[in-house]
Image (cartoon, rainbow, N blue to C red; front, side):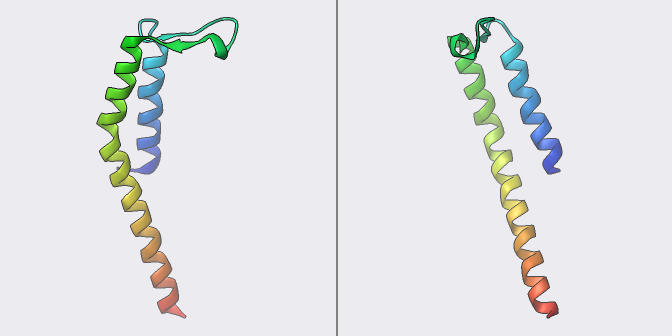
Length: 77
């Protein structure tokens, strides 16, 4: 998966949970008074658990690509 697509997908998923009043109470007073509901905590944890393997696969892929580029640059010298 492309890194930007994954980041946008994660952002969009979290934002959907935050926008749902059953999952997150957003206080008009400020962030200190906003909180996840019990349902929201379950939803966000489920989403993170679902996305975690894909996030780590993407991270591993990116690190491998960086390592390949570094080795290639050293071999070109």
